[in-house]
Image 1 (cartoon, one colour):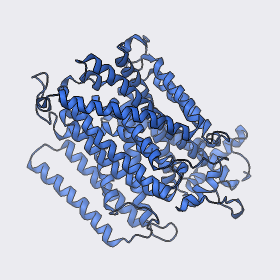
Image 2 (image 1 turned 90 degrees about the horizontal axis):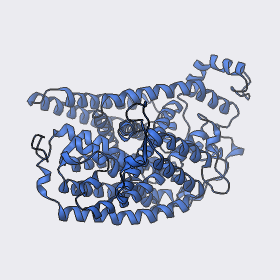
Image 3 (image 1 turned 180 degrees about the horizontal axis):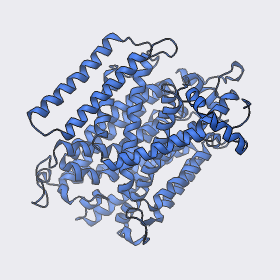
Image 4 (image 1 turned 180 degrees about the vertical axis):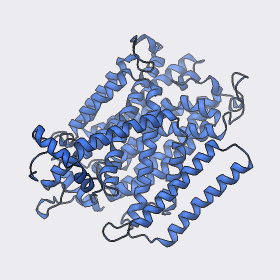
Length: 574
């Protein structure tokens, strides 16, 4: 086949390309890009560059809007049913895990300020196949979580204006449970926000900052009113005496199950990292914007969860719209909460939908999906095609899929992506492609992950008692010893010029361990959906992506030529 011909020019050509799948897979699947490639030739696929207009306060605003707006209102109800009053600790654990992952994201984003986020980070580390699986999972996470948030918006809007959601959701007989309620309000919200993010990134930031400022006032009201009117006995006593009592009604297992569910609340900082290409001074602004927003949000989440728990026993908190239910005895307050939550949900949708579009844009640049998604509009300097396509797709999911169906799928994909990024940052520090033997580092990563998996399995399946404590303690010590040996024996071959994860490799290792542990807290149905979706993505990669990227490689569009390298923006160096 001619190197410059398309594998999709005709049916016979495509069949011939399929016969070359094994050789193309071996060549493309583990082919890695470089940071320089991602910032030059690969980025030029979009044509027009995105404008560098954002500063650290824009990123903090996007982080606050993206995280506070949705997660605490969507996930607190289901997580409280798992953790009870200890939902406060669930948020603290998830926040710590998110902060550790945020450090890993920040190192990559400062070193390689492009819009691809985790996809780009894994493409320069583990190759195209791992990046595609991760990127596809992350985009699906965004679509599912945004759909869940949009449906939650209609719940809180109903609480704000005193109209039951059942009055504007249409019931369709014959459809499976969880897919039989049509929500037109959620669809309208998603489509309106899609139009806004297509218009301008800086204007989107202004809209986000305005809505977030209003929403923060509502958050402060919730916290103060809850602590003022609530009762401390709700931290230990259930509403129904038949249910378990105490701060940990479902034990430590319930706390970690709750943490795995509320982890969705922190997906907003990942969206912030996708805006690195539009940040004026990446080395200065990104660390403050990403890590700072995670810390602030974690504090606010814990205070809000405590406020809600103080107002209402855990077994009386509803899965949907839990804060509106907690304040239901004060009708006017419930309306205020509904209105405030609605504002917050709008900001989170705006930020997350900006993030998902930028992921799709960069994946299009790599040609593993059609390059049409990579185009940046010359007038708006936004990824218009990706924004519009994913906006319509999100609206379609929000039309019928129920909240519980969406949340479990999202949590497992998010944890998987954060786990992969933590591995990638260690690999980047200790392996120089072409000059360093990667086996010691890969062996360490596999062995450490295996140790974390064993710890998680013992936590869930070994009978409580002294033997369990001894086994868990021994496994934890083994994980620490493995990390210590790796730290002492294997030298770092690369240290970031501007900003790097401190205490390497301990912080990324802690992130890996916590992500695996939280993954172990999810139910079996989540894993079935995750495996099914991953298999579907592998089929797409084999049937389309490797042939498309091979065609691009044949035309040198994935290779850097001296005459094609655009001049780098000086802001990369600041």
